[in-house]
Amino acid sequence: MVMNKKIIYSILTIGVLAISIGIGTWAYFQDVIISKPNELSTGSVNLWVDYTEATPDGKAIVGGNQITNVIPDKELKNGFVPYHLIKTIQIQNFGTVKGKLYVQLRPNIETLGSGSGIIIKLYDGGLPGIIYNNGVNYAPVTSDPVFVCEIPPGGELIPLNLMYSFSDTNVNQNQYENKELKFDLIFTLKASP
Image 1 (tube, one colour):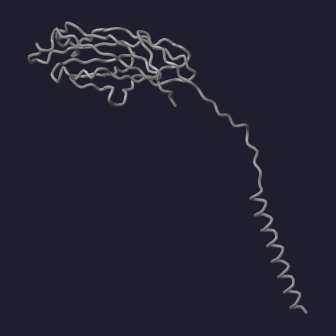
Image 2 (cartoon, rainbow, N blue to C red; image 1 turned 180 degrees about the vertical axis):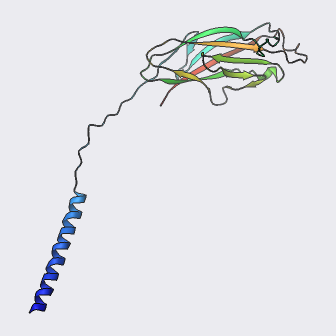
Image 3 (cartoon, helix red, strand yellow; image 1 turned 180 degrees about the horizontal axis):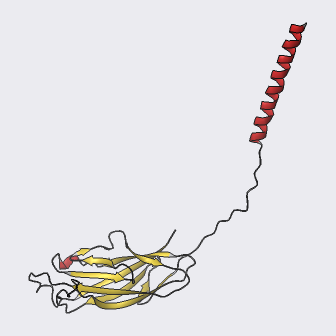
């Protein structure tokens, strides 16, 4: 009889343990967590550029840029070649989030060829964004646009200086002098993460 009691207690203990494990597992899978309200917010970018015509896909074209009567500049004493201002372009983002400004150059002005010494850049006061350098177009319309700078939201006016330099390469550059170099800039503003 003592043996039967031990067996009954063992079976009873195993049963209680199995029920406890079952209830614990059921409770684990039935647990409820209340999360705080989740929010999803969106923003917009809205590009405004002076000197522009707008395109249906939201790009801004600054047309009629030209470099005329170029004459090579000698290096300055500090080792730099002077840049000449073509125009200052005013840019604004009237959206609600900051945006990344990209540019493309049209037409593809590689026709000057390497050795010309001409560099075209957009300068926002930070690092200069070179878009054309010595016969190489870094921003042709046939490829991805080149990043220029970030534009904050809220309509703050950002001036971009469109500049060029024509350095003396110490080789005959007569074929490049007195040419007219005409090009358009195509700007795109994309929301910044």
